[in-house]
Amino acid sequence: MILLETGRLRLRRFTADDTDRLVALDSDPQVMRHITYGVPTPRATYEELILPRWFAIYAETPLLGYWAAEGRATGAFLGWFHLRPDRIDEGEQELGYRFVRTAWGQGFATEGARAVIEHGFTRVGAGKISARTLARNFASQRVMQKCGLAFEKEFVYPQGVIAGRAEHERAAVKYSITRPDWLACRP
Image 1 (cartoon, rainbow, N blue to C red):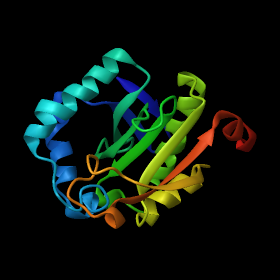
Image 2: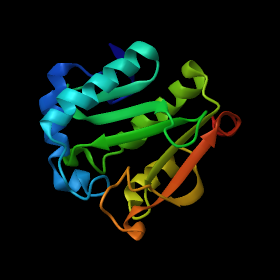
Image 3: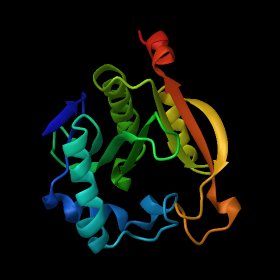
Image 4: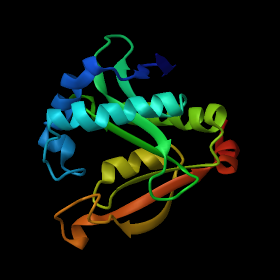
């Protein structure tokens, strides 16, 4: 199922056939450096935990979830986006994204995130959309800023989210935008 399309991207639901793509994405230490400090996600984790959880989100909340991002012109897998109920701040929707390294620096994250934010406010009816990243992930923060999200706060991820790391290595930032602020900045 295709969720939405932009000028260059198509966002669709994941299927079990995407496992190899996801494992390859998470096997790149550079892709994972601000998520797991370069540790890849094992195939079994996708097969047994992650994909079943994503499929359950589709069944429970069809307009929310995780979506494969593909190039419209090529059909190539570029990464993914998510819009899901926020796991930390109840009542908010959380935006996330991850891309293959060859897609970095081409504006795909910003293009897709803007479309997901619009989807969140217009179709989902979200009141607030937030995104988080490690404090030193300046590229991700720049995407958030380009999408209209404003810095909200600094915080430290709990050990359960990023295990085995010192507190300074779990330092993070949160950006967000409310529906009224999003409506005010639309052309």
